[in-house]
Structure formats: structure tokens, C-alpha cells
Amino acid sequence: MNVYIQQKYSSDRKSAEQIFGKSLGDFGYVMDFDALPGVEDKTNTLKISELINYKGLDNWQEEEDKIDTFQPIMDYSNFLLIVLKLTRMEESEFDPVSFNLDDKELIHEFDKVKVDTGFVKRFGFNLLMAKYLLDNYIVHHSNEDDTIENNPWKLQYWQKEGKKGYLKNLDGESDIQHKLVQLLSMFEVSFTARQRKNYLFYCLFYLFHSEDWDIGKYYEFLLGLADKYIKDVYLVADNLNEINTPKPGSFDSTILCKNELDITPHNDSVDFAAIYGDGTIMSKGIPLFVFNYLDYKLWEKYANEFRGKKTKEGSKERTEFFTVLGCADFGLKAFEQFYFSRTRRSLEHYYPQANANGESGAPNEDQINCLGNYAMIGSETNSSGSNWSPKTKLDHYLDASGKIKLVSVASIKFMIMMQKCKDNQKVRVAGQEWEFEDIEAHQERMLELMLGEENKSIAI
Image (cartoon, rainbow, N blue to C red):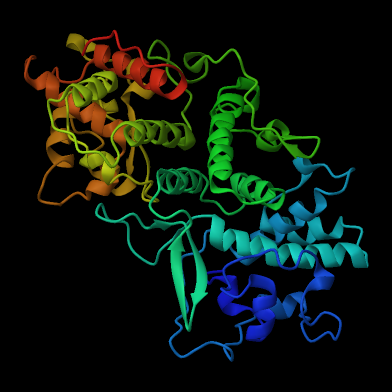
């Protein structure tokens, strides 16, 4: 699961070329099981048990080749389940909502299948096709630690040129390439549990039924899927449990309509505060995906307006950009370096719970438990500074000494909050750098950017 399928294909070079083309970087030369090389004489047949333990044959690889490995986002058991579900989607009586992606249910889900030769062939071919798509069209994490200087998420395909194999970005250095990496990694860090990767099933299902795997259309699909998640799952109270986590089956029942993908939002009565609060009552919880989706929208705004362009601090464009965000200019480097780190999963109260007593103008517990006072940071950082004041957190989190890893606090939303706190230091007395009026205004701005048009008439 951590190697490109073309590099580990079990036959000789000639057979690999029949499947993946001369460059070994394509797929589509054979479109069903019977067309695979070696099927008729059964030289290309493996039992599932052999496939699980298969190490690959390197007899056709050139000396110059090296095996390109990465950290897999999916183990083999859960991959089998996703491919089984993809295969069963062709059955008119199949109910995807009742299908369990938990690998503890692997045998149970296979027991439900009416097995015949046709199904076995479809499933076998789908395993090969799904692995190719997983390797080449879904992000994977490089074998590197998360650092602020380098985005470890890669969206690359493998191909052969002459005697050597190469990794290439799916769409070079285009805007779509960077947006695809951010969107796919946003989904991945939000749903790290391998039995909760509905998004991965939807991506593969889309690619399975796409005629040309066009990169632009793929991006539009992912962007639509993210919007569908936020509006029709996370902003529909009936889809959430008592702590605002999506109920089992809520994704499939919302997104799979008659066993086809529906990524058009149908929720016309979006009311974020009614579900997640606005400081007037204590929030029951805000899921990680909401924060990651918001960070994507903030990064996307930067990408659409400034990525690849030279701008100066104080320019009209830069001033307007940060005015909409609700803070002074803190530079574009934070946007350039931003990526969705797997380590940034802990919910931080910027104004700490320990001081939320409502006395002397301090926010109360209801007021601090809302989107406007929350940010996602690294759990190690959160545990060390959870009771610090906003001013103390600002000094520590942006300390240039590197004692606290910047990647842990590099959420764009959190950078905006800290900059607003910094702005307030210039005009307020000590201890009043972050109050409920700031929490309230910040939440309003973030919701405008996440769900609606920017209100540019609001001053800082």
C-alpha cells in the first residue's frame, strides 16, 4: 500500500506495458478482467491471501530504478472494503448506507455478496484500477516529518522515461495542482481513521465513472464535495448527534442518491449559530472538518488573489485583503507555507477557560465556547499553554526561537486571531487584547468568508 502499483506489478515488463502503457504511467489500455495479460493461461492469477502478503517481482526493473515509497493513508483491509463497496454499487438492490467501512466487518460484508464468476472478475479488476487511482490521484504523505518549510502532502503520478522511473505532479505547478493538494489533504487530516474515509470512497467512485480523468473537472468535483459536506451534513441538525458529530450513515444518505453521487447542496436555510452557537449559549462542540474547511477557504482566497504575484505591504490590494480578514497585514508567508498538518488536531480556546468568569469585562463560559474563540493547534502545544492569557499565547506561539513548532499553530484562522490581538495591544490597556467583542466580530467575518460573500463595509 506504500508503493506505486506500476512498480510492483506481478508480471513482466511486457505485461505491465499492456496495462499501464509504454510509460507505465497510464491506465485504460485494458478495461476488464478478461483483457488482462496472462488471464487465459492463468499465469497472472493470485489468491487474495497471496496478494495480501505479496512482495512484488523486480525481475523487469532496471538497475537505475528505485522503489518510490510513501506513507499510505489506507491499509489493505479497509482498501478491500472500499473496493467491495465500489463493486457492489453496480447492484440495483445494494444499499450503500448500510455498508460498514470498518475492517472489523470485513468478513461480514463479504458474506453478504452473491458470489459468481462475473462478480469475482469485476472485483479483481476493480482492485487493480482502484489501487492505480489511489496511488496517482489521491494525496499521500511523504516519508518526512511535518515542518513549516515543506508541505509533505504529494499528489504525483509515476511513469517511466527511458530506463528510469519518475514522479511528476499531477498538473505541474498549476493553481489547480495546489488547490487539489490542499483539498485532498484537508479531507484526509479531517478523517484520519481508516474506517471513516467516506470522502475517499466518493473520490474513487467519481474517478471510476469519469470518462477522461480531467484535472479541472476533478478539482470542481472536490470543491463541490467539500461544499456539500459543510452545507448538507455539518449544517443540518438532523445529521448530527448530541455533540455535533455526524451520525452513522449521514454522509452516504446525503451524498449518494439512487447509488449516484449528488454534490449539489440542497440546504437553503443555513444557520451556523443555531447549531454551533455564537457566544450567547455554550456550544455543544464544533467538528474538526469545520475548522479545516474554513482554513481552506481562507487559503483559497489568498491563492485566487495573490499566489504567484508580487505585492508590497501597504498596497491597496494587500490592505483590502487583510481588512476583509479583520486584522492588520501579517504578511503572505503564512499563506504560502500553509498546509494541513496531521499534528494540528487539538481544539484551543484562545481566551482560556480558566479565566472565563465574566468578571471585570472578561468573557464568560458561553462566550468563549464558539467558533470565534476556537482554533485548531497541535495537541502538545495546547496542553502546555491552555491556561495562558491571549497575550501570553501570542508571545509564546510566535516566538522566533522555535521552542514551539510554528506548524502547530499555523492555522490561518488562528494567525488572524493572534494578529487581531496584536492590533488591540496598540489601542487597549493590558489584559483587554482579546474580548468578547473581538470573538463576536471574528466569528462573523469567518462565517462570511466560509459561507457567504465578504462584507467589505465592516471596518477593523
